[in-house]
Length: 81
Image 1 (tube, rainbow, N blue to C red):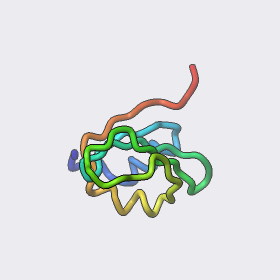
Image 2: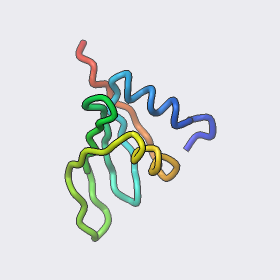
Image 3: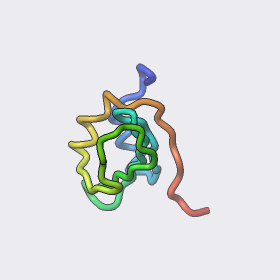
Image 4: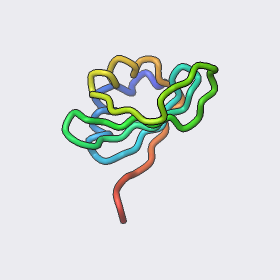
């Protein structure tokens, strides 16, 4: 992960309507904002043997806890053109 990429920027990008894809514990996820302090985390690709939920609602606090361990972060826009 880039050294100058901070959680504050990550959080602001979620607020601005981006879907953010990332790897966490060898699995690929996407996270996006649904409502105030309510985010949807979806499992895109599972590489581990342990079963993981396909979708889960999480808080910004939970995202902040896993942020230091995210790798291969990628953005997709939710905004309609």
